[in-house]
Image 1 (cartoon, rainbow, N blue to C red):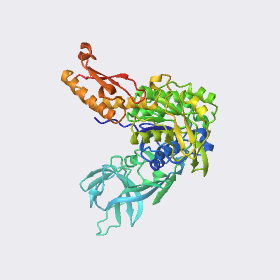
Image 2: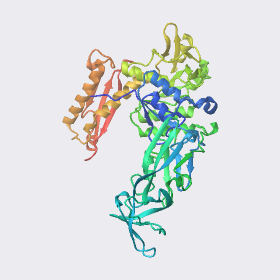
Image 3: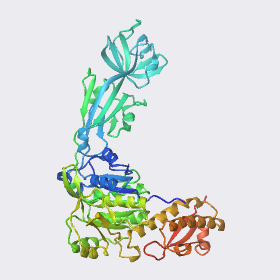
Image 4: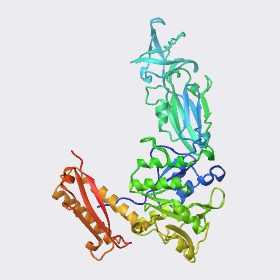
Length: 552
């Protein structure tokens, strides 16, 4: 039986750009983060809320390989955009980053043909016979050209073979039977370039025909930079006119404007906790309800008790995530640090202090940042190298050149038992995480590795026994489930995750009439009782796993 992953992190915070609602963005490197969310944020604008980019960088520098990121914005942030003649272009998400988006449209044509015959009149409706009707589709905007010069625009109302009708009546004579005609009709398109810094998107053959696959709103829906809406019925004319260009222009250029990051007053606890608007519309922390594979979570540098309690509640409620918390940077005295720590009591969270010093590539000087990003990376590194059962402590903090406060052993002896995991500079050993305690007052769950091991065991067993759902709930099924779980726990014991000289000392699995009543069986409940002896503490901790047997 294969265990679930434990090293995928989730981060929430302010960023230069990026999505602000829906499913959090999957990120596999800091370069990937830069592309999706931008770079470091200036302290002058974001103050104590600028640390997301630094934390994600430290996560990858310290051994992390995959994470999900959810961007938050101030409540008064605005989205850059431009509205012209029947078209609206908006940046994909809020922020002043959108003011740098440049949209260039160049006139193009997908084909041209000549009119060879006209029947009917304005009263009955003219029908035009063309040399090649295949270049047109119903709804196409067309340019009427004479000697290469545009004399007017119209729209295809109907196409049947080589006959067409137009939306608006045409007074001029369009017939040209010459082998090389001077009068032609051409279907109008555009080639569009959308540029933001060194990110360029090119879309060729874009149409204003709402029924075409190349319709501008459909094609640009693929854009990572902008959202486009267009109004049907305003497109009879030069396609570039929708961008505000002159009738005879061959090129139009527009810049988005009005984007704003908002002010510090708009950055409240609520923007981090987010809003649950339902699937696809959740923001902030609430957006992580969309995911089930995030094992470690942090909101870097945000030390508001309300936000931290919300994060801990999320991890507790999912039962599958673990929160890594920061302490305010300015708290240095043990009694002040303990006062902050005492606001949290949970075995689904751990708190780390002090802040770490790194070289700030934005300001070209050393700077202090919250440790949560680096710690999440260390969790991931330790899980991969040693296993989730190994305490993520006595681990070097990579890419760290100092600490905001140096604690001694006496202070360590005060803070560590209370559940504050210190990061210390040890002579000859570098800067290391020197603690692995949870924020729980329950001594049974005081170690990070024990809680995370149980998360791993429970989620793995649930995941790998899903096959039992819809199976007959009888002795044969119980035996199969028991064998599957025992094989998994046997591997965990052999890897050192469980203690005991024998399997019986390391774990037990009980499934059958002892764990289920007749009522349980009749109501489709498969209940398995599992006891394991984690490496620390060396005592049995019992939890129950129930699979609900859905009625077929």
